[in-house]
Amino acid sequence: MQVGTKLFYQSQITSMTDLQTKLGRIQEEISSGKKLLTPSDDPGAYTVAARLNQSVASLDQYGRNIGMAKARLAQEDSVLQSTSTIVTRLNELAIQGANGTNSDVSRDAIAKEMDQLSEQLMALGNSVDANGDYLFAGYKSNKAPFEKTAEGIVYRGDTGRKEVELAQGVSTPTSSNGQELFMNVSRDPATNEAVSIFTTIKNTVDALKNGPLDNDHLKGLHDAVDHFSTYQAICGSRMQKVETAETNRIGQLTNTKTTLSTIQDADLSSLASELQQKSLTLQAAQSVFAKLSQISLFNYLK
Image 1 (tube, rainbow, N blue to C red):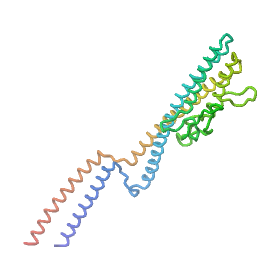
Image 2 (cartoon, helix red, strand yellow; image 1 turned 90 degrees about the vertical axis):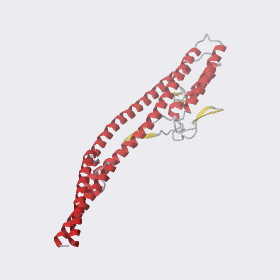
Image 3 (cartoon, one colour; image 1 turned 120 degrees about the horizontal axis):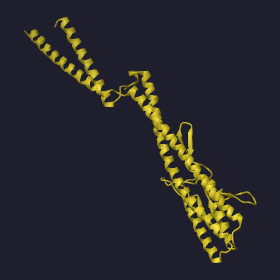
Image 4 (cartoon, rainbow, N blue to C red; image 1 turned 120 degrees about the vertical axis):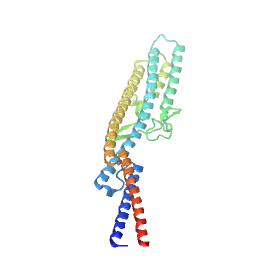
């Protein structure tokens, strides 16, 4: 075989090998949907894409956090609505109990209803979330925070508040603890010490046994109405904070994914066209090479 012919064959082989390499690359990009497959493709762009991918992962995690916060706060809001309804009823009963025309039987009926409402409040205080954690136990969420004892209903939780990170540097409690919500409801007029809703009810029920209620008992339950109304507003504010965080997160996620797509996503339509074109080119080159090889072999044997 002459030197010129040999070089020609080598050139053809090199050309076809190059085409096969490019076809392999195109197929890889189509399969992955990415034009950046390794850092060497474009070190600068690859670094930026890696950082943006990390941002997407963080925003996705914030999305899960926000979902959990929404669920817990929605449950707390529901409990607070029920609690406020009960406390409003207790206040109405106290006003009835202050009426000096009530008989002993009437006051006894009021006291019994108050006791029942106190039990309902304890049950609400022991509400659990979707994971089975006690909503108002603070950090001791694996054990019921409220317990009925001989001395009355006591709180076994702590003063912690479980917080969730909604965005970088932005977090919110996902519920109030039972101490602040149920135990620090009003103030003892004599000592100024915190009084629980359960103690307030018990004192009111005990007072009903001796006659009409006085203004101190009325004030205790009136303060309780204001107290739970305040915590409903606090819960609503937290829910609004979560909604704002979600709106901001969605905007950031959309912008980040758009930028990321521009940097790393392959143009599948263009790649499909290029794949077809290079495949045809390779087939033609292989066909020509095969024919020329046959002719050269024939001449050699001739």
